[in-house]
Image (cartoon, rainbow, N blue to C red; front, side, top):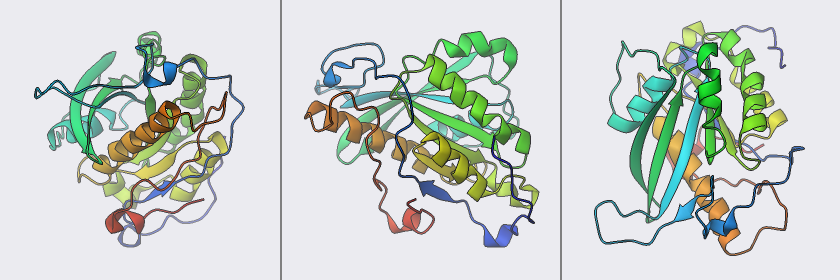
Length: 260
């Protein structure tokens, strides 16, 4: 478990919400579950869909699960992503909550299903059943409470145990609007993410809408890229992870993003 470096946290004025896209090393994980190269409706397989000319037509459907301790702001992140609003008195999730939103990504209509899971121990068995069919997982911690960050290796273990072998995983440190209370350095989060082969680290604020859209855009682009490569046979046999690449290129994001 990573141990935080003992130095004073940076001042809020000098540390805006940050993000880092990582070049992942190949972790030791079991072979991927057969996917049918996006052409068969297998459990856990992301599929491109032909347009039917209706308002509900979409090109991709991705299922993303949000995981982390209680009260780190997972539900607020989902609510901000879905409605563009923030609820100060958001109630804790009981079991698993579900929401859907469509996004336009590089000319493709992508439908995102987000499963917001409860962090309490008593709901653990319920939430574990949703891991297997997810395409991506967003691990969330509260950057003002170090204990929630120290739980991340446990959640990664849960994903490795119950999720698909080639699940895309991102890490977000929520509540970046409260940097004066920071207990987790961004560098510590990046170190942990690199150790476990995660896609990216972003600091977010559901309250101030910082990096919320970017989290789901980055996840969707990575999933599209992987499915495109699989569809055209560009990935080597039995590969689990593809090298990540800087898929967000707008200047407003690049200034807070580094490649490792």
